[in-house]
Length: 195
Image 1 (cartoon, rainbow, N blue to C red):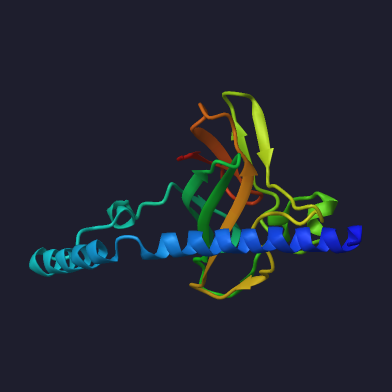
Image 2: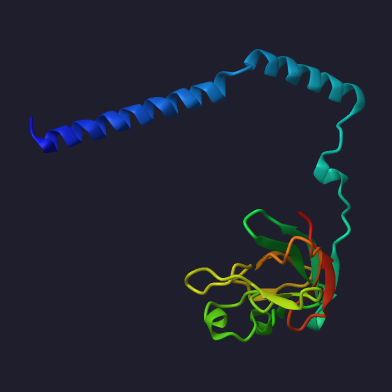
């Protein structure tokens, strides 16, 4: 028997073992407790029918935005969340609305003035978070090609139109829960970081 044949046979056995392990794992995850699950669903459904639906965690949250920033020509930016995640990032979510009475071109100044970001088109790349406690400024993150990790590809908003937006930043230290959000052509606002 040649070494090449032995190596192929060994790789085949490893692949077979991995596939069998995965199949058992999937079967174990999918089949456990179906009987109890159905009983729980019936109980939950009847309880809901008796007293209405319970509010979910999201329904219990206030519809009040963290901050409302006014920009030029009737633009309004509402920041709805600033969430810290375990990967060391803070994602700011919100909506940009044209509160004016006519269509307008979203200012290119929102992209900032860094060449690497502006060559990728319109974005919220000019946004920053300022941590006055640590005396640091955090810029929008970029991928390996220099594209900002934020909403991109917008140009005009019709009157009354709203655009959902996000921006991702490096996370300030865990003990920092309040930062100032800044975006060119908009007023600055203090926001709370959750998570």
